[in-house]
Image (tube, rainbow, N blue to C red; front, side):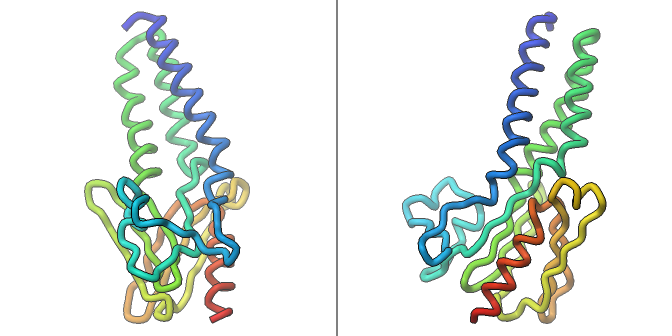
Amino acid sequence: MEHTEIIFTLVVIVGVVTFAFFQDEKENKIDHDHNGIINIKEQNRKGMGYIAQTLMSNENVIYQAKISLRFLFTKIVFGVIFLLLALNNGYFIIISIPFFAICYIQYTSTELAFTNKRVIAKYGFVQRNVVELNINKVESIQVQQDISGRMFGYGSIIIAGAGNHQVPIKGISNPMLFRNKFMEYTMDK
């Protein structure tokens, strides 16, 4: 690979990562109707994520969370470092690709939402893990954040349900907001 191709690739990837990093704040700002419910029409479900595809009739998404790009920041930084090293030795680009691939897979394969009927969590790419609990069977939603998670607004959400083991979903953007929205919704019922 020539240096100009590597520099071009580096600029494109850094640009995309930078754009995505600042888009992270907008991820949880989903359009709601006047009742605070996310409405997904039947014709829009095709090509959407697991949650949208598995909604039952008369089921509406109340709140949906995504994995935080800030949670993936370390992997992104290592990917960029290896891309920079590729300027001197093109073989380093082979090392950088898995870092970006892992970030992309984690970001796109993790979904978390609660609807008016259940809590749905899906994570994993090769081995898909899905947790669906009836909303009235959820015993608790816990939030765990280390110091970097508190500083950058991400953490793990642990869902505990009647008869189910606890399920941690790591790297969720603004986990306290998800927990608070869930508590507000279930307290109103």
